[in-house]
Length: 333
Ligand SMILES: Nc1ncnc2c1ncn2[C@@H]1O[C@H](COP(=O)(O)O)[C@@H](O)[C@H]1OP(=O)(O)O
Ligand SMILES: [Mg+2]
Ligand SMILES: [Mg+2]
Ligand SMILES: [Mg+2]
Image 1 (cartoon, helix red, strand yellow):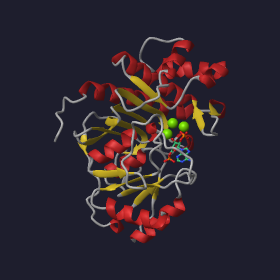
Image 2 (cartoon, protein in one colour; image 1 turned 180 degrees about the vertical axis):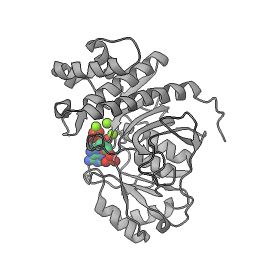
Image 3 (cartoon, protein in one colour; image 1 turned 90 degrees about the horizontal axis):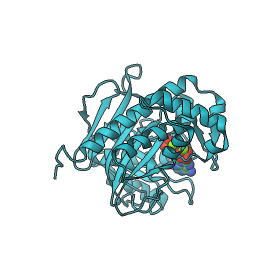
Image 4 (cartoon, protein in one colour; image 1 turned 135 degrees about the vertical axis):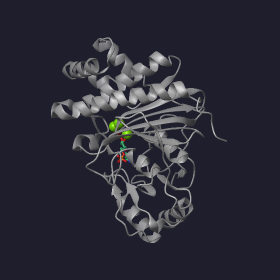
């Protein structure tokens, strides 16, 4: 059943505006970023002043418009409390880019820490990755500002801001800045950062995997590139994979630039985070694709901050997902 366009209209408007503001902040920070503005988190992954500032801006907007909603955000303000100079740099960014009344350092940290919710299967919450693909951001490549609304464990709204992603991948020197949005049963759309016009998007209609390309992480530590090469070989895929950081991969799958997204586990213990998949997975489903884990199970967003019931991700156009799963099952059993 097709959903009325009024469904989650207010949430969609606020989410798009917040993601665009955060995306533009990231674009401007990139030009002036210096190495002292990146710190390594406990798990050795990088976080920059832009990640903190973006989380603060988005959470502030969500709290103003939907004060009863919880937020599951990737970052917290502990590193800023420990480093006043870093906190002040983030504060300057927040106050220069919010377009709203200035906040104090403590208020900014409080906005960031609104993201500490545990998630779960009951009620409404947002999940935010202020910069997904921080390593891509630091390399000047792909990254995404990712926001989704989850209701009773199901993703109902997803927005991805992809500041460096060409609006048309076949024109890499053309306009950059692609925004993807979907609501459940409402279809998936793309717009550029510069125009509000939404264009409906569709996953590939190929009925043979060998007629498509697949995409995967740049980082071999996040997804097994050797297993993916074996799966592609078994499927008879000859075109080179598209290696790209972040949920931009869900975006290019949704608009048919790639036919398959493979995220094949490297470790037995890593639990994928809900903010790394919520928005992108809905956008793929609403553009006609299928998203499962490597065992063919749907992603379960109702069990906390991680996808602890799932392993990896296999996303593809509807007509080829089963074929891809057969190859994945055969090789990874
Ligand atoms: N071992 C891992 N396996 C899968 N994903 C990981 C792993 N370690 C970190 N990630 C997450 O993968 C995401 C980037 O994915 P991609 O490689 O597709 O761009 C990041 O959010 C990153 O989390 P983090 O933000 O904590 O660095
Ligand atoms: Mg991170
Ligand atoms: Mg991420
Ligand atoms: Mg992140």
